Image (cartoon, rainbow over all chains, first blue to last red; front, side, top):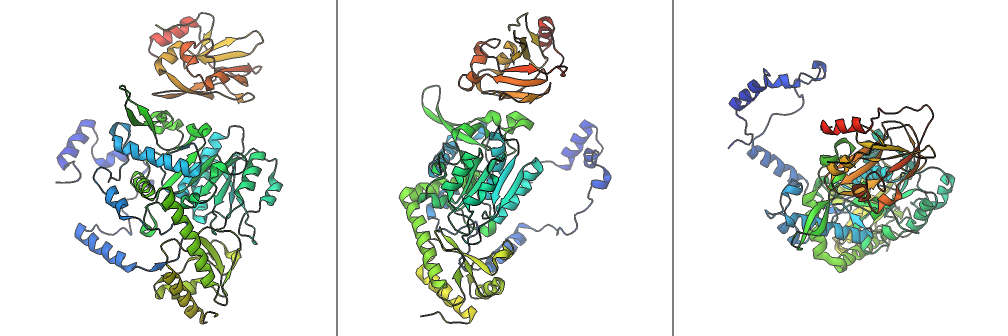
Length: 457
Length: 130
């Protein structure tokens, strides 16, 4: 059966009916100079069998290295039931249904997901996911500008300590829409934003301040002080958080005096494998006063005509299939499948399980840092409280060291040279609950060999 | 059949205007407009002090099935938005020409105004399905 249902006869009949000579005629509006006749560099189509072989070969090239890289995407243990359930026919689809097509089960998963995200962030309401953490941050900035009706500046303070990829994506999405994203410099001693340095901006019209927690270096920002400054100066607070950390840390809704306004981040650590970079799943939650500016779909719990509980998409009038160009956002879909995985993952772990995962991450990272800094020439760049990542300073360029480690089957971390050249030879490392003591010892031995020095006794 | 009070001015986009004793102009949406929208669930009113030009979208009325902009018929400064609509959007359904007013505007001298209609003119717009 052909996947494309139009036969040449169908196409001819349709063109005849509307009086257009050929398919090309449908594109007459586009000037000839703007049309591309061929796509150079795009290879010939392959058969399914050829694609399968090629993909299997490339996947095998990844091997199964020992991974100590985080930098925005994290390797966690995913209990077997998560994907066994997600791949069931009732759930397994790349398509996110609209209201009329959504089953009660799908809506209930969305509702449960929202309830868990809102609970973790201590926010009133959550949407049922965005594309990833980077686009969630961009949407949070746009949302803050819509929600803050007294601020006219559309200025957003974006700390340097936020994931650089997220910052690039946020700029790409928002700057064409008139937002001004201003970089807040990191304090080179602490690897954090120094709240005292915000005083220079006090009294100015700032729409929102973004607070990463933990930040890209794994360090914990002084979220309370930063939130208090924002509140005192009439700026909204956008929390960009790792959701696993919320099991053990003060949630955005409780920061400072009155909490953050919007919390966003990447829910990839909940049941989503690394998959060479995606797809992942973004989350966003907010206080009830901003709910009409919250983009994306929201499921609500209600009762039907007979008083029985049921679920439905809600607040749809702000969305583009109803409000067209005036819609709250241009988001018309989400990561429904990965949102389902996150929901099942969280439901399996429960609060106790998530708490244990978070504590194990902190402990493993502490052991990793202790083991690696035993080696001469390796030291911690930013001492102080951290979650599950740390920046190490080496006595030589990082890239060749990582290459040598890779030859030993170890992914040693994220080289910060490109995004933070001012840090010098700096390496971002991560250990989640999946790294055992033996893994950490293996890394320390390999790094010792690469650096050409034995570990100090 | 919807009500169209004879003492008000109207726009083709279904706003009404009432000039108050102090010269400010009260603005809302018509009975016909609220009937077409159905039960309102949310109204976003403009904040006092905002400068509007005739034709600007100045408020949003949201029902269970649609969200529509309300356009300012006049140029001027917003004196007040109807704060009561924040908790009782249904005031517009119950009393569109009274308790359901949306904003009060102080027209600027010589400011532009959208084309306005009297009751008969607006009735013709409604009758024509506008």
